[in-house]
Structure formats: structure tokens, C-alpha cells
Length: 183
Image (cartoon, rainbow, N blue to C red; front, side, top):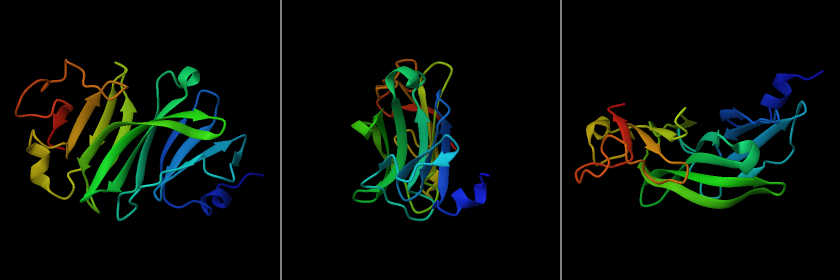
């Protein structure tokens, strides 16, 4: 008999869960691990470990989303905090293979983050665009600024390019990635 408590006791802050078309469950753990649950069991080893994740406070490896054609292309996206000059969030795309995740491609980076309010969630919309929600990095005023990616919903094409129908596309005083602000 499978017991949820048994699996949960072996995990460290599970964060985001997605289901593959073949029934596998992919999920993230804050310290940077991408895990897979299949056929009623947790794989003993992570599918992938993000090498430069910064897992402090409310940040770390946060969101995962599968490409709308994951069954054909095996692309998945991860959002995680990393440490540059200061803590920031990056979204990367990978291809799943039998040996793990390969072909990393940075979709967007430099999203302001902090120990708290670094939150990030990834989802594909019905328009097949990638939506990224961002935290305000504990600076509420950034959410209202058009030159900051903090406290926003961002909208990108699956390759990281900016859709030309975004509301601030091409405006010199605004980030074109912004779909909505003030969050």
C-alpha cells in the first residue's frame, strides 16, 4: 500500500507540480531538485539539480511548467532564484531526455528577488504564450514601475522572445515583457 507520508518525509519543500501526458508527475523542491513520481513511486534520484539555485527564505527552485507540446518536444521550463550581484530570478527551458535535462536556454533572467516576495509561477495560456508571475522583492513600489520586472505578470513566446501584441511592446520607458503590473 502506498503511503503519502512516506514519500513526503523524503522531500524538502515541494513547490510546484505538473503532470506529463504519460501520467508522470514532475515537481520541484526548493533546494533545486526536479523530481519525478511515476508508476506509484518516487524515482530514487532527481531528474535534475539546478546548479546555481539560491534556496533562502521563500525563494529557491519555484515553478515548473511543461510546454504545450511536451509529448512531442519534451520541453519544460523552470523558474528559480539565483545569486548575482543580488538575488534574482531566472526562467530556463530544458529538454527532457532519458539521461536527464539537457539543452538549457535562458528564457528571461534578472527578475528582482529577495529572501521574501521572490515568488514566481509559470503557466502557458490558451494563446500558447508563457506567463510568468513575479514577486515584488519586498519593494512594493517596484510593482508599479514599468522599468522593473518585479510585481508583474510577464508574457513571452515559448522561446523567450516578446510578443508584439504585449501592451508595452516597443515603448522606450517600459519593459516589453510586461503583460500586467501592480501585483
